[in-house]
Length: 164
Image (tube, rainbow, N blue to C red; front, side):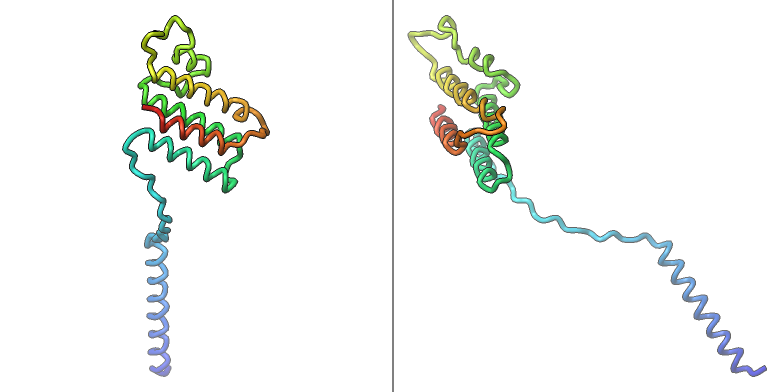
């Protein structure tokens, strides 16, 4: 036998052994998952008080309605929740899970509970908020409505700005 054939056979054997070792190393090595960078989420502004947060939330609802991300029904539902959260933050009493009748009762619909000589302006404002929430009820529960949400949103914003 020729020694050249032995050398070629040895080199082929070493190359195939090296190839098998490389394949085994890559099979055993953990696969590194590709890291997908998340797109940056715009931060919500820092609020000084609950009024600014409520005004921002109302503007966001109007914006989403204008882009057709939500329908009129959902916009009224969100407006009602925003108003209730604002009342909770300002009065210290939880208004988020109360019915409209309970909010009216807390506002002092009964003339015996309100001091006529010195009416509390907050009680008067809660009555206005209750009326606004009541105005949201029909479009909130109806499948279709002809009410203009932007008008009601502006009423809510005006009422928020007059709250002291």
